[in-house]
Length: 205
Image (tube, rainbow, N blue to C red; front, side, top):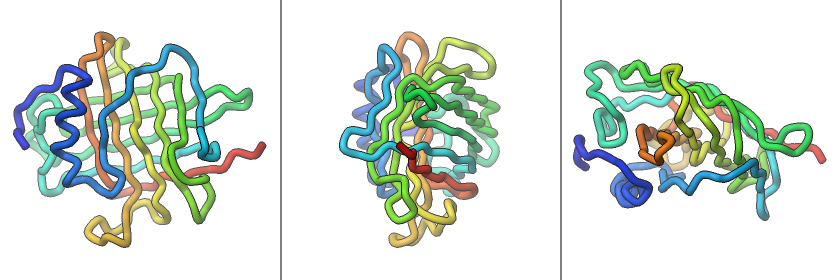
């Protein structure tokens, strides 16, 4: 995997995502979908649930450090911290927010709304937790004109930080994709949690 490849189009994401899928956790990163035109809330055949979380994603072996989807050279320890909540609101609309900080690059991403939310697996209950995908407008270092997509965030059990070297002890998982208004991908990062927790919460009907 080249450390200096640039990513400019959605099709480029799909091609390059295949290159990194082999080193991912069981819930592998995958190419982002097209953004939605308006609010959308969907579970398909999957029960609807909310998802919340906060934590840390490290790159201790520098496998992703200064890779094609992380802009700017990073000389220090490569890690990011985050916090979010997302899911259906009281009136059935998607809502939530996201805070993501790439500390080595001084990159701060604030997703201040959720325009699309979808549960993709599980039920949100303790024995069958699940994954979700959502997106919305974002600020990057205080500047508007960006779009974020979480694709996916997965609750793999308690605690969120589990042994990433054990096939039977999978940590919670998250991937973020950030694009500019013109569709250019400006940032992608993914990984199993090295601290914190992601949790699903069933929605009572």
